[in-house]
Image (cartoon, rainbow, N blue to C red; front, side, top):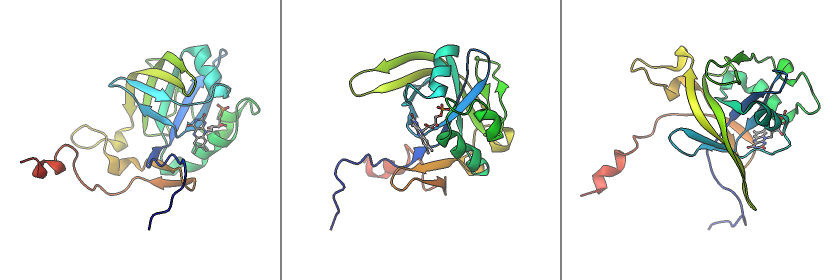
Length: 189
Ligand SMILES: Cc1cc2nc3c(=O)[nH]c(=O)nc-3n(C[C@H](O)[C@H](O)[C@H](O)COP(=O)(O)O)c2cc1C
């Protein structure tokens, strides 16, 4: 037996991205975004509402950062997703997170989060069914605590949060199950 759910966007895992940008006075704001994905080797697409304070900041500064939220910072990560800078002017300060200006773009890196993509605003896609902010990833930085001996970011060290679209839970990335572009090779002959 299978149950029909009607039209349900059943994608899992969804990321927990923290998008941050400065306003015209250099005041940072951040928001939680699960609807976002890299859409090119150097581009990222964020499906974020136009009226969010963070979105307005992106328009003002033409730049933003996208951090991967981790388990140790689940409270501020969720907070920035339920409070809005349109009503709480000191939202970023209240979150307890820190804003450090990126060396690459005019946007705040949040050192509490282990990985951060520093982006320039490339374009806004506004069609009948899609509203998306597209950024060029100028630099990605990571805390050394999540970098393995081979110099790459290690998922095991990240404790990155995953958003559960079905029941609004936060999960943590789990065990490695296989290797992409390799495990299917046994069926190729
Ligand atoms: C788990 C989670 C995921 C979210 N994902 C998105 C998203 O993908 N796009 C969006 O526009 N808002 C999303 N939100 C809502 C914004 O984070 C929220 O409206 C926030 O208050 C906006 O803040 P701001 O107005 O200060 O920028 C999400 C919230 C949570 C808690």
